[in-house]
Image 1 (cartoon, helix red, strand yellow):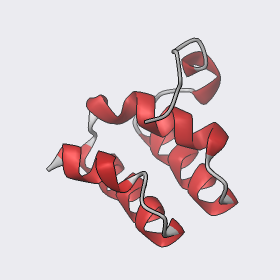
Image 2 (tube, helix red, strand yellow):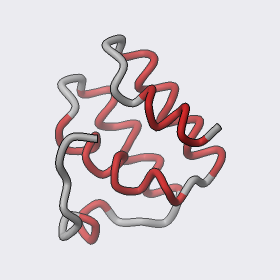
Image 3 (cartoon, helix red, strand yellow):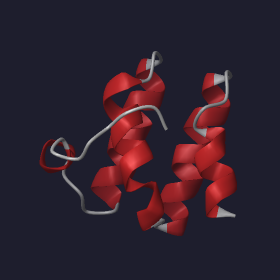
Image 4 (cartoon, one colour):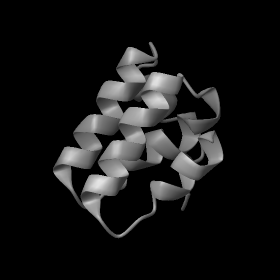
Length: 74
């Protein structure tokens, strides 16, 4: 299930990406840390970037601390 939501983070529709972020937050999916970090700084839609940051904060990860992770395409 987590991998399905991670794949949705690449969907062309921003509402789908935002919803996937939210779902991954509800699931507290640690596997999603890297993709969410990438989205938080690189998604073309500001609402998706904000949702990714909110999820990371909810999961108690500071986006600034995660920038040392190698972030490439999801």
